[in-house]
Amino acid sequence: MMGFASLNPSYAPPKGSSVYAVEVSDHIMIAHSFRGEIFGPAQRLHGATFAVSAAFMADALDENGIVVDIGRAFEVLRQVLAPLNYRNLDDIPAFKSVNTTTEFLTRHIFDGLAAAVKSGGLGRDGREIAAIRVTVGESPTARAWYEGALWQR
Image (cartoon, rainbow, N blue to C red; front, top):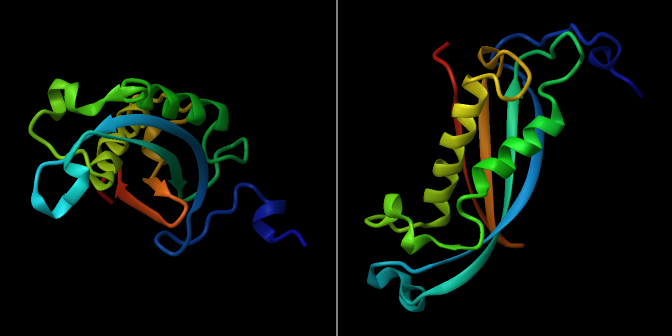
């Protein structure tokens, strides 16, 4: 059954109560190591394949009835992930003094996506995108995410 929002794309829920979202996914294969006893055997160089999802959120659909152009969203995610894919993260100068944990990577990816949204890279005025959530899964049973608003409201 179609709801009112499906029949009327200009419908917008009250601010703060609900949001629309479009989520795209990709994956990266990396190598890295951690510093600190808490990481046990992961202190040694090891590989990982991360499933990465990015959700773009808006309070209202645009005039086309969408949150963002899904093709552009996928392309922007791929561009943000490209410098990490098939890399040893320990060799990236910006990461030299950082444990590249799953949690850290969620924020790093978020920052890249936020820059693309703010520059209009998703085919919609970036000010109309309220927030982004980046989820990085390191296994089918473990994942981390970072979610943040893009603008002060």
